[in-house]
Image 1: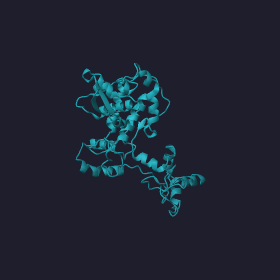
Image 2: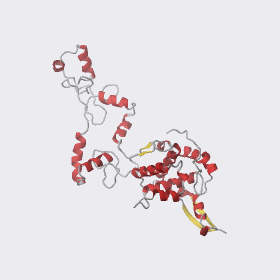
Image 3: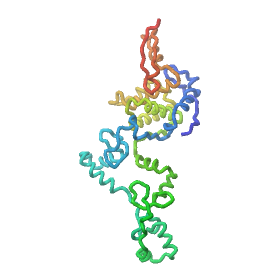
Image 4: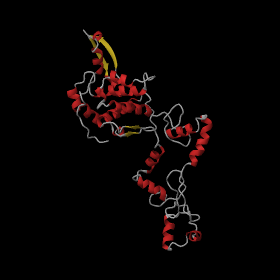
Length: 333
């Protein structure tokens, strides 16, 4: 994500329980966000580490699938949860064996060269690079007759393709067979092990932030970072996705455009008291106010007549990790 963001105020300024719109709407909070949000959270599509105890609970119940689960009750990743539903939601322990067989059967195998005994991946005319070049040099005679006349290559100096579970011989320059070499080049020649891991977790739960304005996107990224650093509660990606959708539909330029009461009323849904997505939005708002150096709790208490004359002391240490601060009330002298 680009770090070139607009620092302008939203219509009406930022109203956060007493926030000075002229001060914080001009870029004060934005500057702090640009400094606070770490690079690993500055992605338009946030894909957490599958080992994170904050964002994930376990991997798919299928032994051969390393993907993180999305629905904890079933214990399956998104792809295999769809398989299970298509099968009519059968008893899970009995279904896992059949799904494991299907998973192994669906792994695409790179076709081998048509010359007998050659285990290299085919490239053109069902022949590997070496044999297709030899066939071209021979003037492309009858293909079937030519293939049967070729001696079987010796496997002594051959090595296997480094792509997981690929049975073909590799090419000497990259360690991949011809088919996986093309795929690796198309991916931008990434570091192989990191690429393998990325492919294995391509369907892991994630949060797409591309529909948010740059400033709002940065605020959500900061909320995710605070949840990660606090490591105090499970934050499932499916709930954050719901929160992002609601934020997008609200049409705000900043989460601090609305006070907590308005966010609470806006996100309230039937049977959603204390919902995870509502909590994520409110906690992110609290973290943003704390980052801006604003005391939202004093404003919340002093706005009511029965709290006049009461001085509110906030423990900001609780606010730094993205949770709303603890408070204690002391009668003003």
